Image (cartoon, rainbow, N blue to C red):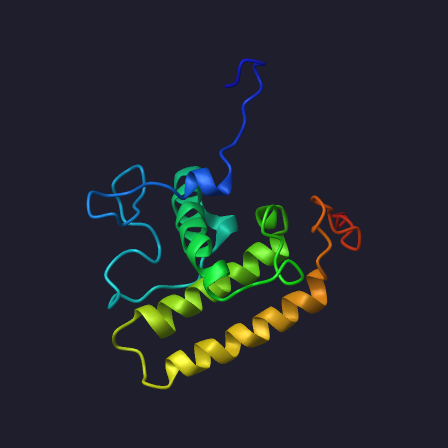
Length: 155
């Protein structure tokens, strides 16, 4: 709780800063998070909807750690990626989660096929183009929710 009595959630980048003694990030509960365990173990898709709060915090923190390194490394521009509010865009969060999973399978996995890194880079290029087409830099000057996404009615 804050002084005003309103509970505030941690920002994505606060969730992502938990370090072990060797400098590798890990969760606050001591369990290795997605993307941080044994690289030879199979991963799987991240189902944000099916997680409890602790699982969500751990997985989201690990995604934040990855993106803190990867977004500048692959030079995503402000036309392609909302650097300061990406977590407020569920479509972008899902895209980056899938890209992170691809990185784990193609780059981090020592048992990956020799061609997998090239496929990862080709898919990264396609991701950047797709994000530029759909996101169009709409939050360059502050967060702007996507007005094209109305709420879905349920009978």
